[in-house]
Length: 348
Image 1 (tube, helix red, strand yellow):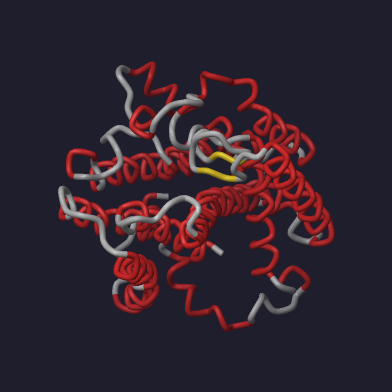
Image 2 (cartoon, helix red, strand yellow):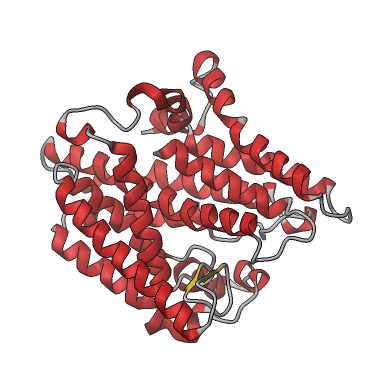
């Protein structure tokens, strides 16, 4: 699922840099692209939360973990994620036609916060973490205007001074800790329910019921069901409570489908049919950073140029998304030691 999550991230970022000419939000193709976008980051963060929680649980299972042990395990992760966030910002910087200021907090800084909180989260029972998830769902309502309800993208990625930067990191940036820690917590719960697929399926059913309610509300109120930002039931910037519930439900659903019968000792969905994605799943952080290098070059070249037509833009987006699969296979075969993941293993 790591591989699929990073492919979705690549697709939505590419579509944002080379949007086709004349496409409106009501266009079916735009809806499909937005659907991938709405799923990409929640899946990516949920799986990352699942992964680091699994690693932490293994450490705790081996015996008492001292504070120094936690620090030696976590600090390389936090440092690397922070470094990669700055690299992403520089590669797709606004001065070269990109989307970020050099200091913009983002997904990777969110994961760094999740890593820092791991020693505390791993000690909390699942019920406590579920309560924290519910607080994250309610947090957009409690934040109100502080979340930047009417902000443009450029206001959300800019900050003047340390206090504004901290605000972008924690509650009103692109991927602020509140409420996006919801997906990290969801990943920890998915891990703890790995041997209880029935419980997860009931949660998915409840989530789908809640999703249906959001659609009914959109129809009755005559407002869009989902928009990246603006007046809608589901909004990405800032993340609305309905968005958290719906995207979390579909992230759970995707995880459950791909898992197949693996939890009960059987085969994952499609058996070995998706094994070609395994190399990509091993270097998701490397691919995440590398694809921004490509997009940074494209954004710089396209400054002042007209948008592409639908077919060329669609073809370029799909090509740039899928090309990382054979590149990852080649990478793992020839230079597996050259990656951020390998660097992290050496420093840990």
